[in-house]
Length: 372
Ligand code: ZN
Ligand code: ZN
Ligand code: ZN
Image (cartoon, rainbow, N blue to C red; front, side):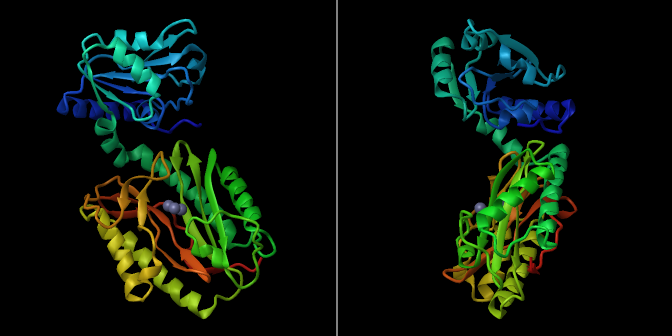
């Protein structure tokens, strides 16, 4: 895994917010192990090892990273943010953590910590109650700060460059299988700077009617739609984009439906303003698709939050009345899927700002003809 592009002052600001939440909830200490909260607050992506790595955040006092000695070279030191306590192979890391928390009564625990460590903590910290750290860290991660938005922009631009290569015909389609095109797109995501590829859906013709179709052995022909939905992780943050292309002149029914999809997606993006509800983004996109008579063929929510994880809070779905605030990052990806015939989806990542929705993806939104 890569490191993030956040700085010590970003981590300090985030930890300060965690501590205010801890004060409000009377949490004495927060313990984070594997999962995304750890790199969010320290820059360090721990491997999911059986050896304990744990960031210990007391309500007051020093933040300490307890880490296996052999993993220390992978930790980028942030002396202003945390000190490092390395433990050797014959030491008990849980005892080290317990010793750092002599008087903690209420302790918040990261969701992805191994159960064995919690079981051991229960025996070594007598009388403490344990709660989930998602209540002190999770809500902070929903609103991205400046360095996170910068990372989303860098990843989005890299995904855009691959979409541009698709539009320009540099990624041949006709005569190749979906799986071959998927592998080509994946290689290009890496070549454009991603550290890992998270997915590269390629669905041709009737396969595009299945929103999460797995790219397979179907050979792409002339005169059909090809849906490409791909993304990866770069500097710790995710990209996610969908563009459809047509291997010829689009058939009339497809062209007409695409005009509806185009308008619905633009309306969804425009609705992503500070103060609106998350469900308003869904409603804005869905109402256009419904008015055109395709309502029953738009079978999923309009979007998901994105950040260190490809899918995270907040979700753009009917029933989510959470107000959008500055720094919320989410996808806007309506689709129309006609079983047995064709499917289409159009997706950008959007960040809500005080001056309006800012799209991380700027590559052409039209149904581009690719005759390669
Ligand atoms: Zn999806
Ligand atoms: Zn996607
Ligand atoms: Zn998405």
